[in-house]
Image 1: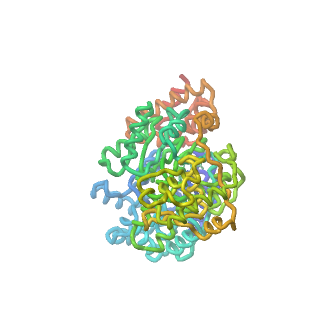
Image 2 (image 1 turned 120 degrees about the vertical axis):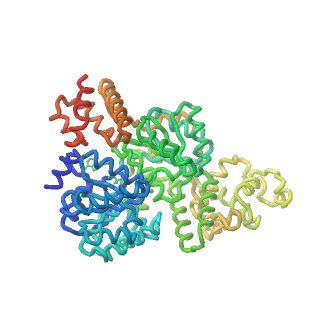
Image 3 (image 1 turned 90 degrees about the horizontal axis):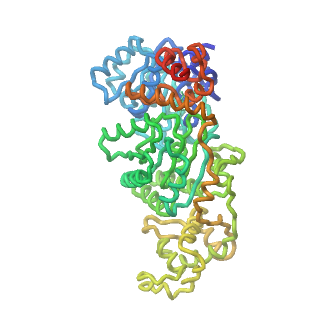
Length: 595
Ligand code: ADP
């Protein structure tokens, strides 16, 4: 019951979310755990609440400075004695923080793995009892995971150095192998594993073939002016180009990438965190540790590296539980580029095999004709019903017999010795007499011009489907030439059928009609109050130089606008309003509501 009381009294929430209470109870029983919970499920409270109950201190290991800063701001806003140590803070201040932790003045201390495991810190802490180590982003300890970090590997020493402390790992992404590896490294298999469903029902999923990204992104953004969103790009230059393009189309977009100097990056991130209605156009350098709860959409303008990465990136939308939209645009070029990244990434063959497999799974997801939620979650071993909220559920794709067409494409590849890339093969199918075709005498082969009833775009989509179904592979070592697999040969020899998803170029209108409404269910008068409350929040955030959501989340403001508390006693009943925030902000927000 103590845990529930802290949830109410410190964090201002009424009830636990699914999974939280069980994890907290296990930690209070001093059991090691590994919790796999989707982004936004509320992992932080799972260790913060026990940390406030334990008499000794808790250390939270976190990989990123931004992540630590955000968490500490939020905790301090709730009146919790917590702090962090990292390289952006002066040595003197860091030392003071460590002293305060040792003296018990700080209950929760955030550290990076390398800092914690440094000889100096371990020495400093050698005479301090530590109740618990909470390891955030725990998948980084495993080479099987999506983002192995060598600095995390050292953490496997923790359970030996501190046999009496609880070790709690948290991650949003870990398949079975990765989970076992994490548990082995963190506690020598002595952890209870909790897996919270991956489903995020408020996220709608859509994937489109990229034919004209400018048109496609404008359609996607049509009803989203004034909302916060993230658009992911593959390159730094692309983030700049896309952001400029959106500015020209009256969207408030700003770029973010690792090539910017750190002050620009910081200020762009702050604008996104504080202002309403900003679209951040970013490389994947942006995102980890972004704890903004009202991100209403995430779009990818090119293929992510894996389903895990995609899931984590779209997971940044809709953390407040309100509907949020996602869109992934991809084309064959992205695929080449991704394969090239893998090929050029070191010499570890096993690693390359794994990464290529990951990419294949993502491709299969992109091309799936079934419910996207079903396809995505089956990758994480989870079965769900049709979501009725994704593109495939809303407009089910038609499946057509493509055996003859496949034979045309496969034959063009086969007859040219499996030495050529997609563009050349499509030119052969279309009967285009390019210089290369004339030079190689490919206008003389039987397949030349055989597919000229269809357009180039069609063939690109069709060949992509042959690739994602595993009938053709792209050989990156041989400059991206297309090669036929065993199953492809069976199609060529008429021993196997090939069904493909109908290829249509979407017109703006049909896409628009099927958009999902993302604005909270709120009437006009309440909307006015909500706008005024957001205005107030923004002013306070600017004054205090802290992110707006740290003050109150959108959901809290919506509740205030709807229920219109008239006194502080009523105000504290609002979700997300605890005593500390009530004291700091209660009366000013009340004044706005009652005006
Ligand atoms: P995760 O680390 O799993 O991605 P967070 O811990 O950042 O998620 O939590 C996401 C959001 O949900 C935060 O704004 C947090 O305050 C909120 N939250 C967590 N638990 C609860 C709860 N029991 N009731 C209401 N909101 C909650």
